[in-house]
Image (tube, rainbow, N blue to C red; front, side, top):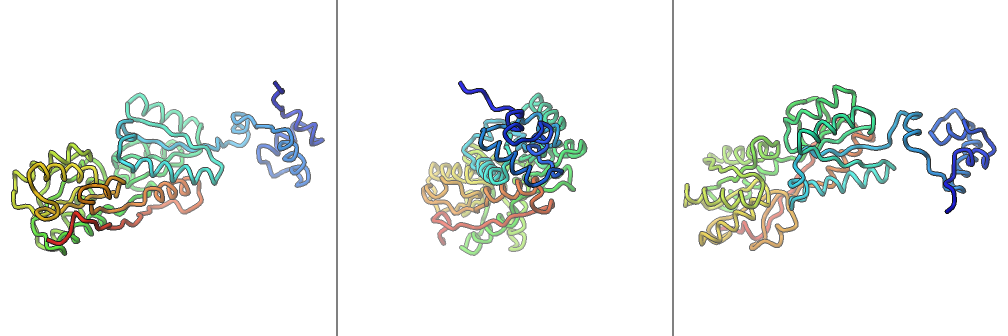
Length: 332
């Protein structure tokens, strides 16, 4: 096996001292351009790979960014595509910036502390916290320790922190107004958990739209799973059999609602129209295909990455959502 190239061999090939070669490799600008060119050429010819730990000591950069999900792994790797879309967007942006993505889960108290130690000890240059809970204290803790932090979703515990979020309120309002325009009058909601920002904001949008039309709110709460959507829909039907529409705060709960309606002998959209939120792949294959609100999760990941890298202004960004109309809300 061929010996791994060393810094000394790079220096010898370039005709410079070891210290000069080290300065060039670690990004110093205090070296003449022709010398930098000679060292970089020697690196390429020898296939030299710098020692990342040593480079970090010199540059005070780790060239790595942590993407932290303070959620149980079962939620992160569930059939909810939100997390996957964020990961894809962040990964694409980091690839272009030649930065390393460090994916970390913090679903337990022990892993939470481990993430905090890892970030504050300088192993990464910044952190993206993708929590569904706006009250999560981790972003504020890291910010107080001097770690650059960007939040996925609007934080409620640290309002001054930069974040990227979706227009959850506006998306829900458009969905419910769409139902009203289609002639629906008794519109219920299957809300998401009220300790999650998306759950809170989507319920707010539902209530705003009904209040503007002088309609009564009829609400059951789920936990963003299919099973909770089924249970919530059964509860709503028992409570108000005259319902003619339902807005579910995500597509998984909407799919669960479709099952409950089918079991109850209600036709969709003939008897009850259904709208979801997220536009997951299964929405277009549901029976009938599901009207929903599309959110740009990959774009969210890209904006988060660019913000933590300092490539765009660190401030609140709210991305627009889009109503996608399908057969589940055909006019009554």
